[in-house]
Length: 463
Image 1 (cartoon, rainbow, N blue to C red):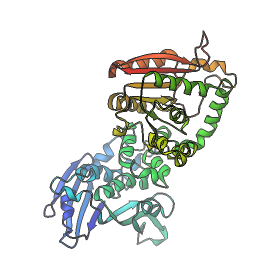
Image 2: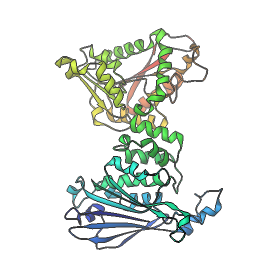
Image 3: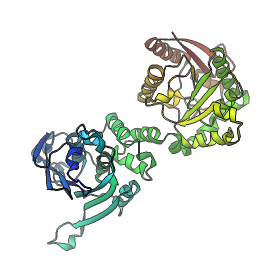
Image 4: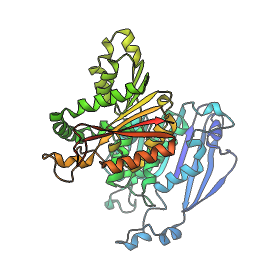
């Protein structure tokens, strides 16, 4: 299998600096599945073509454990040594690691320069609907040309194969081109030569977070990249685009939660308790992490103690709704100066989260699965570390008080967990101890002597 990357931007030999591979040298790199060779088929000031050729060790592959146990012949008769697949992606990530990461110590000014690039893949197994190459590459700004090959030119009656020579052309940064190829090549093949674990999810997020969320085929890409593992696909979509992709499923969950809470005005009580805790902390600069449609922001905006108010959410759609509900375009200048809406994620360190007196995290953590909850802890308590954190979450013990909620069911379809009071306090005390905070706990809503209150709140104060 062969990947050829070309440019005609003068001086074209700058491609060698970007790839960290000298045009005059033939280089070989050991891989777990064989060898990867890098060479230049042409190198001049006007045109330069770098080639990545994989030599798959078919014997080692047959002896490996990752084969189809229901079709043992597939260990020996398959297309793996000849087609671009996950082997190519692994080779790109290892052989061109610095280039894909945007590192060029010798010529750093080249890294962010968009140049005319052409990549040709021989051959790509396109398993799916016709036009798949166009559907995946064209939204990224590439011109696409495909040549489909026959199964055997001597036996035309056998018809066409799934194998294509694919050429894409665009004006891109080299790091972007390599990243696109790294993610998308296995998607065409719909196979991987290794077990897909949670690590693969992290690879998809790190390589695709800047472009995949805007791709019209993002769900298809995620499913195939993660070998159709539903739990990983759901996590990927939630982390890539947040509520925008889960809103269809979440509507019924939102309505169910609202129906349960509305008779006791629980949401109003919750917002009132959070505002009271923020006022008591003497905070003047507050960030609402997971602000949703801006209900808490509206309460904060009405109190002039809060001089700077920032609302952050992963869902652009929610931020648009918040902007309309808060009438940002019609606020008096002094009010408008106090409020800012930002798009962000609780999974990654963000300097915009730093420097606040207090942070509010209202009914957010129950939407996070364990890996994302751990990332959230680092982002908020270790990196942003505001003086005060006001955090609320449902009390699962109280669920028995709602006849409309079936036993064992969460209040919202998107909840990953709902904690008892003991579970919440154990988590909060651990996090506070690890990051230099003290925490106290307060009930919100009717505090039943047996099952407690419907919402539980922790107020963390930095020591």
